[in-house]
Figure: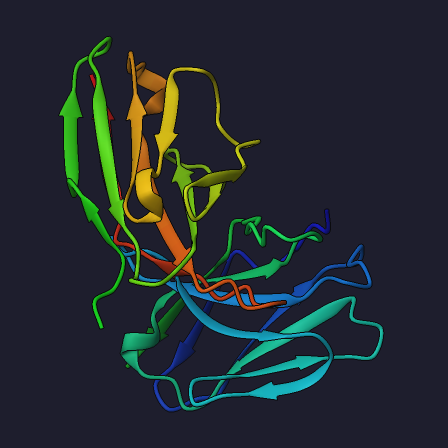
Length: 111
Length: 115
């Protein structure tokens, strides 16, 4: 199973673009990259998923280089409410789609 | 549309007692997952149901844990007898099971404290 590595914590300011990079050197051909967000005392919330190149939705963008050994979650113009823990996960192979969690990145947005 | 709900939100029990956690997934979601976060550790997968069948229970820590999903709707996770190390937050998640999708909808969790 591919292991992910991401920064333990990051700080930024309101209105800035925040990029969180995750490395997954052992990603397998069939693996997908998924990002979740978690606020205190809540369950994780799906943000975005991708396989290669760039994926964008109304919340974030996900950039994946050709070798797929890393990925970058980009949050445009963050606000205080974006303060949360962000998890990078590499989907397991097979059909059960269980999620394998790392420690995540604690993002703190300052005014 | 209602999200994933879990009951109770908190439970405090003594070592040796029994506790049953309940999860109601989003209506129509065939896939139901249980995860757990023990204090200071990462979230860990416990098991996965497809409808009423256990697809994967490789994450269940031991035979004190029993999960059921009768009728393929809600699920229960029973811990009997509870031990101190069972304390943590238990999350339930459901998904529609679309191919190649890792989008799961999580409930708010049940915080279990074993004293």
